Structure formats: C-alpha cells, structure tokens
Length: 190
Image 1 (cartoon, helix red, strand yellow):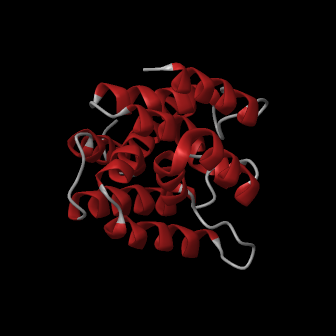
Image 2 (cartoon, rainbow, N blue to C red):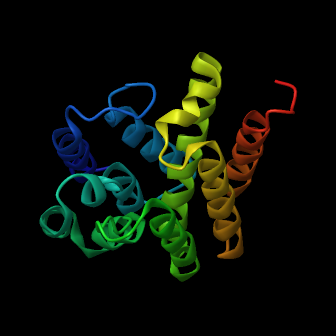
C-alpha cells in the first residue's frame, strides 16, 4: 500500500466521524476498516482496498459532492467502485425498492465491485451475528426491513453475487448468510 491508502483512511475517518453502527453503537470507521481488511486479505488491489474504505461515503456522507471529491483524490477506478456500491437513497423510493434495485444491479458489476460488495455484506453479516449474541432478537429492530426484510436482502445479495460470477469471499458470505437465516428462524435451535 502507498500513501494513497493512508490518505483514504484519514479521509474516510473524517467523513464518518461521529457516525455509529445501527445496533451496536460502535464507531462506523470499524466497519470501513473491517471491509478494507477483508478486501486486502482476499488479494484486492490498492484501488479496491481504498474503495472498500470509502464504499459508504457517497451514500451516507454527501452524495454527488463526495463522489466528485473521491474521483479527484483517488481516481476514476476507485470512484467507479464506490459509485457501484452506493444505493440510490432518493426520498421517493422506499427501503424495499432501494434494496431490490441494489440486488438487480449486482449482475452489471465487474469483479472489483463484486469483491467490495462481498466484503461489505460479509462484514455486516458477521457484525449482525455478534450483535445477535449480545442482544438476541432485538437486533432485528435496528433494521428498517426488520428480521424478514433483512434476511431476504442478505440472501438475495449473496445469491446475486454468486450469479454474477462471485468473488473470493462468496463462499464465506454464503456461510455467514446461512448462519443469519438460522438465527432469524424462531424454530431453529440456537
């Protein structure tokens, strides 16, 4: 890694300073570092690792202005990956419509985007599992889709990533989603 990666870490921290994870309250930067770590461990390029750090920046921290800043600072490859990982949060679209569009778009993405998306969903699934151990089924209350919608979304994303060609993390993502599905099934032994 070069100084670009260090600059991206500082930029991500400044953008997300004060932001917290939904249910745990953990500083949001922990998620971004976790996603970048997964990408790095899977053999990702520096651009992919930088995009992992910044994958939520446009969606959560400034929209088009932040997208332009990312392109200027880190180049078109990073900006393209971040853009592809960003959901359209227009007010006229509900949660389910946004998630369905995100799932449909997976088939249009290249291996770099699939790697970052896989790392993001894998880290989220692992965090959700850890939080479930801490607070039980109350964890589902932190998500707009509730238990059923959240489980649908993770299953749909894992399946779409596999159909799109997968990533080095696709198997781990599939296993993590299966665990979430077991946790979300009130009839399954825990």
